[in-house]
Image (cartoon, rainbow, N blue to C red; front, side, top):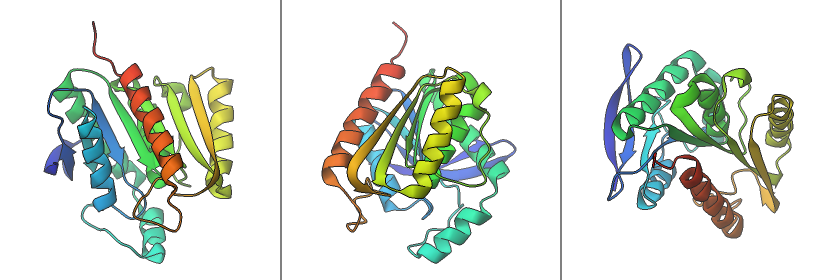
Amino acid sequence: MGEPVTFAANGGTCGGYLARPASPGPGIVVIQEWWGLDDHVKSVADRFAAEGFVALAPDLYHGTVTRSPDEAQKLLMALDIARAAKDLRGAIRLLVDRTGMAVGTVGFCMGGTLSLYAACANGADVGACVMFYGGHPKAPYDFDGLRAPVLGHWAEDDPGANANAANVEAALRERGKPLEFHRYPGTRHAFFNDTRLQVHDPDASALAWQRTTAFFRAQLAPPA
């Protein structure tokens, strides 16, 4: 359904995967896990397009994809946050220009944290932010710049990401930012990834997907 795309990113370029719906709809930036822009992330973009959204998954590793946890950890730690910020801003601007409205961001694991990071850094261009068990030690949040409501999905058995969830929730509530966090009993980190059968939870994934698409439809509705 989707296709490779290259877009401007603050003086440079970034590649990605763009999936278009049958009819024009709001834009969603889909942000990768630490594995890179793999087939799973592309399939999520395709699913959003099937739901009526224009979905763009930027390639934050610029061509590198891995299945090795050790290499993924190295790629995560080596990620240039300043460059990633430019790539995400470029993806957001592309969708804003194409759709004429604020866009949503959604990400998984590393991408979950970067979803919130992008929402904080891009003000009114982001109208809704979704995090799936996000965690990245190098992503500084500017919570005061956040304009979008936040929906978070968290596994029950995921100590590292849940510590991040508690910090994010406290900071958002302190500032009076709208948020909705859900925790899924009996699940582990990456429960949404249906290519990782050892942790995938079909029931929790289906519920999280339903909540996510409903959230985006409510928050990104075009002007009357």
